[in-house]
Image (cartoon, rainbow, N blue to C red; front, side, top):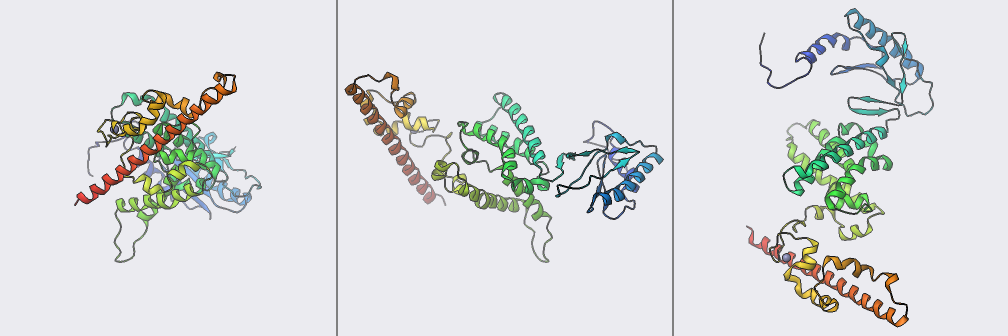
Length: 402
Ligand SMILES: [Zn+2]
């Protein structure tokens, strides 16, 4: 008999527990069962699965099995908590005679859904209840994590990645089992995506009115249901038998290929088809290009003046490199424009502040119109010039790199 030290492990309960359970239950799990009946053991959980065509057949197959299990337990001095047993009938049919399943003389209640190994199985296997459960859970933990954020070190980007991955892992627990059913139904899919949307809005610091579709694209977060399908695909690829002589792709290669399919095929198709986010779609028509973009993200250094933050505000109002584009608007308003001027410029003067006389009103309105025109021109010129310089810089980088 070998002796080995236990270095990691089972603080609560006994180390031998799982093994003993396996040894003890082995004979039960191996017992003869009626056709269509299967016993599934996991950890300390025992499930009796019956596959039949009618409720009566279910009673005929399951009830004797339950009696045998009960007797088996009793003969070994184990007590089954009869009142804790529950059952769910998984059926595509709406109308069927509910079976009377009994154990130890007690009727087993039929539930609409049942939680099994962390997955909520509803009677029609839509997994809508499951999606709601995991979405609520992910939202709770994301909120808690977000409250902690100021106290954790690291960059904003790193924190956002952390937040997103925590959510994803909660949302996608055991996903290969249930994700295909969920992703087919828009309503259920939306439930699953809701907490992801919240995280995306935090990442992009955007308004609540932004659509789910645009928020996820702007935050570079593929929809979680597509990530679930990706997991399912990766799992099946890695488990698939290889042809003789065929070399098995490494996990990293399979994952990379799968991500490419998720983005280029699935997400792009959905992005293309959505009736929402029309403007964002015009700005970002090509997701692969957007996700693999080579221009620096908003938080990095300004290439034109080496300022710390390359933000929209810096580019439009502060960066000395673009002073020329601000001249016309500055002359018009008598000072250098700033972010604080934007609401007035883009909305015009408040209606109630306009003078009553027609001439005075016209003067103010045409002045406002002119400011708006100059502001618009400034934004357009600055952004296209910046983009052009970026392009030139990248081309030079490519030439210089070996
Ligand atoms: Zn600058």
